[in-house]
Image 1 (cartoon, one colour):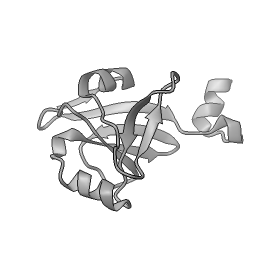
Image 2: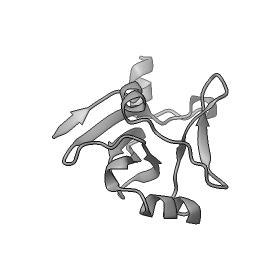
Image 3: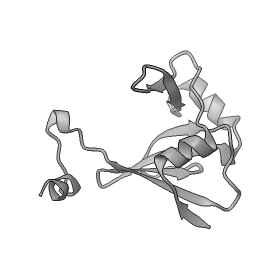
Image 4: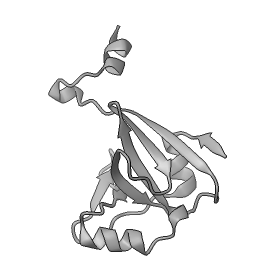
Length: 119
């Protein structure tokens, strides 16, 4: 079953965890609190954590044509990083979160999608 949810629904429903490994990369909220972490297969501690986690708890951040998508499960094509959640997704469920454009406006990056939004 394919379904699309919002980023907020993902955080509230699946509860992504912090990366507590030595060099873990965690995202910080506007209030300055660590909210959840990314896991990378090129870090030995992260790789071990991912290998020891059941498939239904892992999510993959991908990028396609300057657009980021968070997908349920383990994906390899256009993979950027992985996330582990406390709550598993249902088996056979393909969930997508549209994370939006990845252009960095502070660096002057602009893709076709960004240009269309400005017009």
